[in-house]
Amino acid sequence: MDFLKLVALDEVDLGIISAHVQDAVVKVGDLAFERPEKRFAAAMNRFVWEKETRRRFLRPLPHERRRSIVHFDRVLSTKASGIDRSRPGDVLSLLAIHFVPGEAPSGTIELIFSGDAAIRLEVECIEARLTDLGAAWETPARPSHDI
Image 1 (cartoon, rainbow, N blue to C red):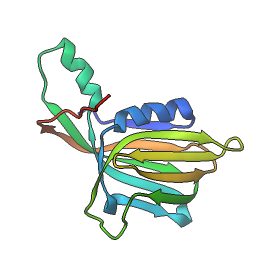
Image 2: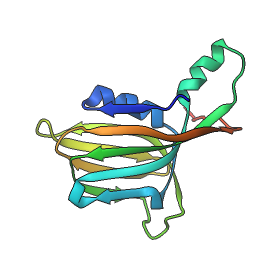
Image 3: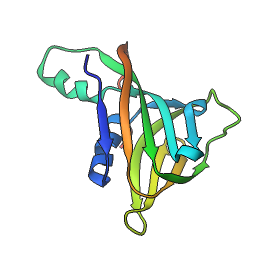
């Protein structure tokens, strides 16, 4: 199986993780900040974008999603907007992950969701991981965006 395991230690690495989690769906109840460990984690069903590029050159392949987790270490605090933590079953669509530099190497990692929702993580530095947890499953729809 083609399980992804990615690590980000700078803005370029974080951009690669962002590209792989674009259009992931996340339940509000699957977002967690573990303050003592300075870790923020989000379990998600990510769209497998890396197979879409192969689709153009090979026989048509089904679209896929895969259960994954992205976590950020060295997190000092979190702030959310547009997210109701009292509704754990609500589903968010992750659009991008950005880093806003502060006093080096610290800064803010922003998780941007559709519907004007966002989570901001104040971090000592960039330290993130994306890990696939299980086998992929077929999905009939490919995410698309209005330009």
